[in-house]
Image (cartoon, rainbow, N blue to C red; front, side, top):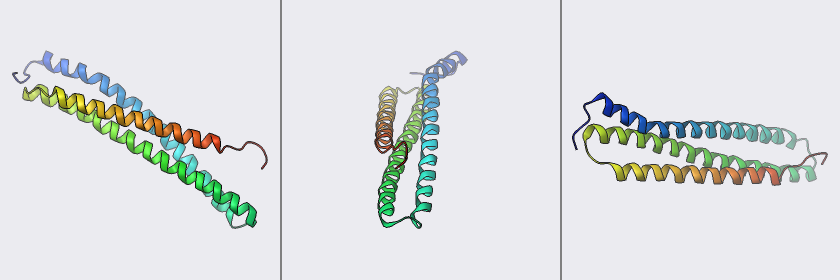
Length: 146
C-alpha cells in the first residue's frame, strides 16, 4: 500500500478517528464523575476523623467501621479512575496507530483492533468497579438519626 499523499485520504483517516474521539469525551466525563465521588469520599472521611477523638468508645468503634468503608470506596474509585485513564491512553494509541498506518502505508488493522478491544475491556472493567463502589456506598448509607 502506498503512503497517503492526498488531502482526501488524510480526510478519510480523520473521519475514522472521530468515533474514538467521541469515546474519549465519554471517558473524560466518567473521570469527572469519579473525581467528584473521590473528593466527596475524602471529605466524608475527614469529617469522621475529626469526630473520632471526642467520641466515646462505642462511637469510636462505629466511626472505625465507617472509616473502613470510606477507605474501601476510595480504593475502588482509584482503581476505576486508573482503568479509565488506561482506556483513554489506549484510545489515543488507536488514533495514532491509524494515522501511522495511513502515512507509512503498512496495514496496522490487527494492532488497531487489539488496542480498541483493550480500551473497551478497560472501560468495561472501570464501569464494573464503579458499580461496585456505588453498591458499597448505598449499602452503607444511613438516612436519619443514628
